[in-house]
Length: 256
Image 1: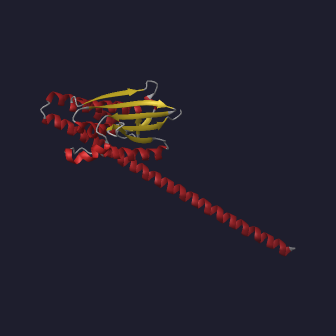
Image 2 (image 1 turned 90 degrees about the horizontal axis):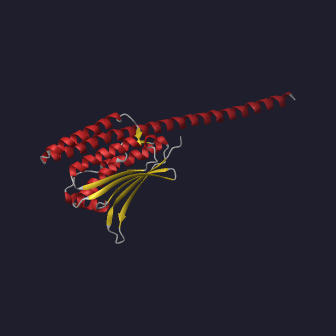
């Protein structure tokens, strides 16, 4: 009887030790997974910060090149107007420099200023239009800063400028089934022709901003658990001739 009691006690102790061992091991694994997740998130945040830091100098450099071009062409009055508009843009960029995200309203205003600048630079080279659904509260929607502007820049420099006959760029913001849809549309030469003609045309302007933006959007999805999508459409007519490019950014509207 005593032997059985001792054996039972020993068995229960062994069972308890086994259960405790597995529990401790499970807790250690959970802790390690949390640490891994935290480190991964930190790495993503640092990468996003690095990409964000690259956007402003890239953008400013391109604007300064435009000012330089106007001065070289002795367009003094236009240069002064350009600089005035550019200073407003710089003020906006500085105000948003340390912010991970800004309102869609601020981003749209930045895009309007940029379109004004480039319209001055190229004079009658292209026309532009901005249309926003009046039922959308732009100030309540948060997006990464300068997430739209690089696609507008790309449409102008790689779509419209090589065409030599002018063109149109439009920015449209609408809502559909709880999704905010941002469309940058141009009737330029199209991406394929742009790639083929870039080296021959002597066009040295690079689309680095677009590559940075795509990476930033992907990282922002991870950080904010946002369901933002990016789609680029090569527009063609029924004969397969390029009719320009449409860039669509879709952002799921967050419920308050």
